[in-house]
Image 1 (cartoon, rainbow, N blue to C red):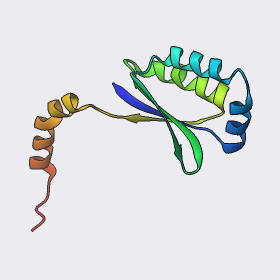
Image 2 (image 1 turned 180 degrees about the vertical axis):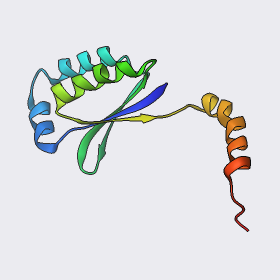
Image 3 (image 1 turned 120 degrees about the vertical axis):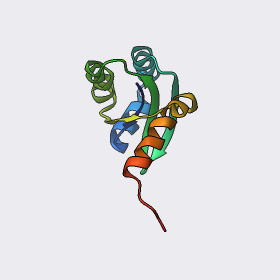
Length: 107
């Protein structure tokens, strides 16, 4: 299953990390371990935030993907399930069934 892993670093920790000359190597190791499809760097709620798009085949993989982010970045870590357009298209029939069974009329 595809996830966004959102890693948000406290400002004080982020300040220390970006001042560390080894920070680039630390990030390189984390990216190598996570093997993401994509990595996005952003700011969320005033904090440095990194989004990794990863595939997780089994739930027991989640701790090993989160631990480097906790240990190296002191990050708050969230796993957000996502799907691409092709995967969403596969979901359309089940969405239609769910709406038919559980939907309500807005009129």
